[in-house]
Length: 186
Length: 290
Image (cartoon, rainbow over all chains, first blue to last red; front, side):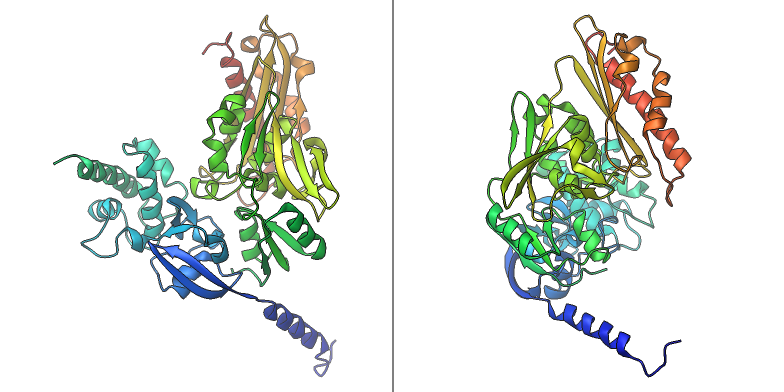
């Protein structure tokens, strides 16, 4: 048995840990988020999701699984959905990032997808919702009139543990309807 | 679930990237990051340096020639999926790419990156194998070409040297008279397949089979090619009862169990998908039923 007084393995471990902690190098990073440039000094390993939430205090982007499976942190990078947890802030510098706040952040500025989710009960606890809103907003730009099957497929990369997805699929179709109505000449 | 500390390097030339890899034995290459970043976040790997290829010019092209579809290291799955020339030259690319993860992952993940990652559950390594593709590696001594058959060494293992970067891969085009199909089965569309298969079926002018090949996803350690030509040559595709390939498929695969699925079920899926994929490829021949 190791004697309690023999702490050398622990010390070596602690030293190795300290070494690792010290290797963090800081970068001055400028990212365009929701139309404005934001500059912060962050370590290279800062995930875009944490950059948005911790450094910019944009807490609309939610962090679920943190390895790309759940879709809660989905943001738009140059208009296309991407997992914010699978990107480093340093990689986002030459790109335009849109979070759910950039799509509508108050009751009277909701976009068509947010409005449809409110109307169709597309959310319950709301944790997964920002990832759905960004994903569906981008999808409807390319596919203004989706079938129910396409609506189901577009949300296949986002997990929701409350709704059972039925009302989310309805929300996709309703959002498409709202978008078309808004696009029609008065 | 946060990556450990690393130094971030952003070279602007392949020479610089290769030099950085040579200087740092525990460096890793970063392109789209859709396989690498989860591995870092789960601390399954702790590289000291990440060498980001994003700033290197000339790696974002898809080029089509008579023999190849050449895909640069920074081409995303989404970009390749949308490429009409690439699709016309090699429909199997799009047939397979539709099944690669979810659109949000395809928007960032690169096709070359998933080949470099060499995950047997990835779709594109099997496509490189069945097309007799070639990896174009760039290293300190310059360029070299590695055929797919010599590239995949084991699960998540390749014959690429530590100080080499893949500049592009070339997927081989099939001869005239070839139809292809790709099928996979996953618990949720876009998740890793429990089993998947790519097939290519070639007939001559009289409509008789001259080549029949398959490559599998998630049921072999290394993406290889199962050549079924011997058993099928001379047959008319739409007349074949595809259960004749069952034994050869079961001999070729080495399915393993995990929390999602048993080895037996994986084997069952691989056999069923292979039969269906060949039937689909047969039916799309000009002489076929549809």
